[in-house]
Image 1 (cartoon, rainbow, N blue to C red):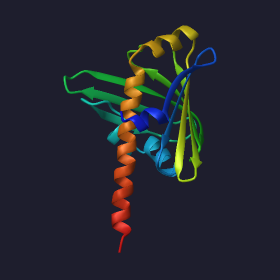
Image 2: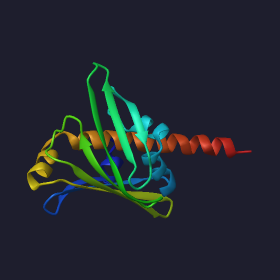
Image 3: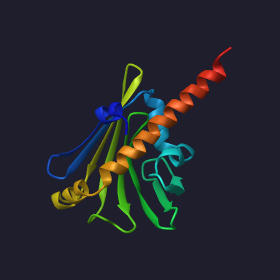
Length: 171
């Protein structure tokens, strides 16, 4: 992670059961939102090095579900999924989250908010766990490094796509 990206990423406990993750992206809100809702884009960034997003299914509607399965180079797999509870495109997504082989007890609820701020976007991800103990276990895990790596890949993807679009529209 670059020094600049460290300055734009924050991961902290919030309240009794939440983790709040914020990250600034130098891209319009619509592009950051699309990167969270379109399988062809998620496959490009939502995986740590040495892994790939082998399954990425999204039924983006309230009551619809999503399913992700990651596979590592050594054959390990990890899956998760949930149900969309609220969608306000391109501002907010609320969904449940449960891992197949849960590394924290129970189910979580994720709330992504996307705020446009003069050409850049502030992404806030609030994750509410079933208990304070579950939240604290997640904070002690390597989750922060995985989130940072994924968001760095997202930033690179957004910059690459913006450059490609600028070249296409250039005379």
